Length: 487
RNA sequence: GCUCGUAUAGUGUAGUGGCCCAUCAUGAAGGACUCUCAUUCCUUCGACCCGGGUUCAAAUCCCGGUACGAGCACCA
Image 1 (cartoon, rainbow, N blue to C red):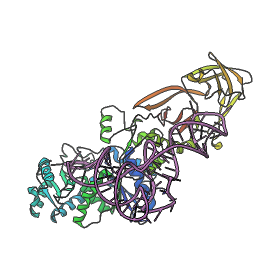
Image 2: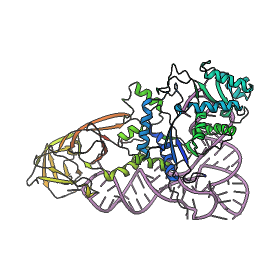
Image 3: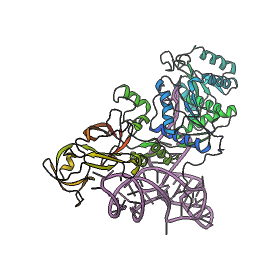
Image 4: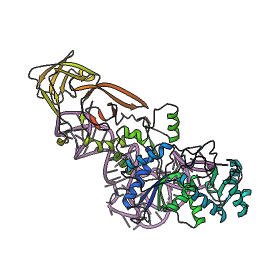
């Protein structure tokens, strides 16, 4: 039998210590679930090859997907949280405009590109018809002259664009003389970074910016989504002009999560602005912040993405897969706590009730100690649903028969197969709240929560309910929503 | 429409010509342990898209078909 490969496949032509990788999100919002893939895969390769991992902000669009100022800092924090270390290098595209201009100038001087004044519609006809547009045959001085006019703000957005000269008869229409730089109205749509603002009107497009930057940073391997496959081909054509070697490239396919369907940073941003969600950390949103807030661990996220690997297949996975990873990570360290939903207060009747009862904090780890409850109250809270069963075993305590709101102790030893239920006394509990999400709604459940002195952020296991994270306001939020596979 | 890509159990994944009547995980069903409907452990179930071809030998290579996805933006 063949050996099963574990972990990620080897990178082609990779030498330990000589690998440079990057992940380049648009800072138009904090990172979301999908971004985690790029982070996890690339940073894992960085570890495998003892290489360099670059976090690059591709913030070259101020209108369609405008950057969000807070995102720059936030994304760096999220990267550190998810990958366990800071990126080796951080590059911000909007800081690198001079380098892009320099290469654009070089490209025009050497005749690798031209300044095109055709409208988008007019050029589309040339692209489809495989014909040269009139601008294509301009001389180098003409192109340089137009380029300077662009830089001098003598054109308006939409009037002119710099194209890379490829071949108008290329089989793939997407590659024919693709646009490299364009104009943006940064008066109306200034860049949110103060130092950039309205300073530039000529901006590189992703394919050009990314291609030049990858070369400048010495990127050796690119691992990214297969939606960027044509981008690789475009960029390779540019690299050929310059005589550079394109990095080795690998792709992963589309991932759809059953419960979320499609989502995008732009859409979430709009929803938040319009008040459909209070913020990026809302537990219903597939943002890293939202997931973290619900108690999904960084280790679970890493295991999840590593397991999917980098196949080019388009897949659809249920959230329960992520939850299974999370349970593995979280269970061993999760203190157990009693939370009684729809709590019914019953009087405890019987003789020889001990003064205290002790339960393990975590039955699988004695070193976590015991939680001890004072039993002198003479009352217990039991869930309504359990009360209806009539005969119960109060976990680690006693068998009781329920008559009205009286819980009559019949035995301290387990005497029959009656259901074992969780419970709490009045004195050992306080009012508690459990938050859960399902079907894109937030549900709040009141109940009695066992007293504790845990720090917010702790992931606990509410006995017979599930794992939950203690929030700053003292409420608990369920980590793994009851997932209903609808699609 | 043009171009590119992918197709292995319910869901993911391993597998680049013989170690494969196909790996591992998850899931489902059953069971053990357990004073939680948790964790752990055991058992069982279950797949190479279809049709040709190459070969002594094909999940693996080639061709065709089908399905699904992506690109063809002055977005990233």
